[in-house]
Image (cartoon, rainbow, N blue to C red; front, side, top):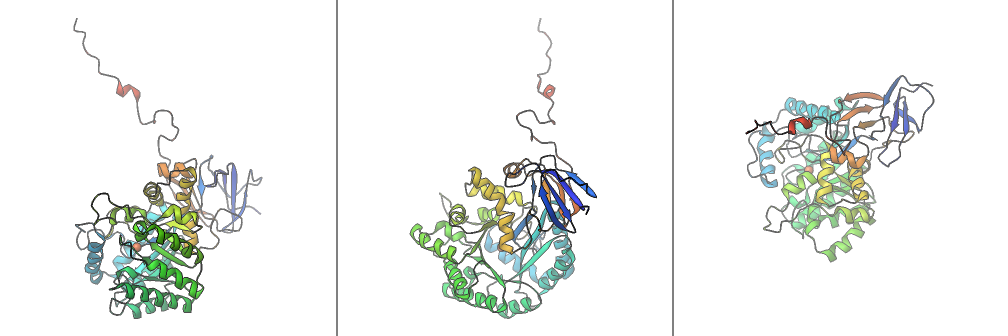
Length: 434
Ligand code: FE2
């Protein structure tokens, strides 16, 4: 058989080098040195990093690219962002949501981001955004895996109709149960929302992903209830706690009991470094907390820890650009993961770990997996985070779906970048004063 595509001379994120990757019928059929057959189409990776696609397991596609609508978030805080989203929601039209979401998906594909878990707000009785994103999910399916979470932004118990709307959204095909316990009226309501949402997921056979303890309050401990309910319903490995920023400020003794409970439940952890570092600690004087959850400690306990982007040009965050290497870069800094293993773990947080959170099957650069990969202009995963380089080729099911020309960079340090002409540094000639 003639493969559809062979990528030659690849360096993989795990450090293996000089490998060829053959894809046939949309699947990887070989990962080995010097595959002796010619393919219909070949890419010379020239020793560059070839990675499985980037995965964003925490995003809000219904709000993305809406920056400035209907006005800017002047304070830059989470609560003004939620209030602003509340102003925008009644003004949304299906066409506008679909157009922005599709535009974002194009941006994602160009960056090699081919799987996104997006929360979709179900507190609008029209379920306009739900229907719009279900339409987008169908449209982008050939090139991007979109997974939707039914997210009661204004509180599952606090917002009128949120409970009924969440079930309606699940009935329409939204596949993950969301929630926001720290935004309920009381701690007890928050815990009750976790219990009800986990029960719904267990009864429907669905996964759970809650915005959980996205606060600086160290006594916000809904992750404890989430872990216990995961155990009660046997949802091990199917439940994600997103944000968990309160853990940053928790009492260390309490955390020494909490993390083993989370590990027992095989809870997935999703930190959102770009947003956590700007949203959390806003009520602190100095010193200000960073707010990111305890990433290295959770990973050391065996939990799957992923990084999400959360927001891109929306009521909460005016920046972002669908580049998961930006997310890894920020996570690396804020969590101080500067060991070699720590830096590589940050790359995994936006690839393999995020795929595990989403439950993506057939993901990865191995025989039998989907023929999906990204060729980056970097020598390894750490250099990819350092440079956030062009995605030279983005491949989906064995077909090239996006290309970016190589960039002139300081890739070959030491040495001068090619943009610089040393002659330009020479001082101007002065006339001899005689
Ligand atoms: Fe979020």
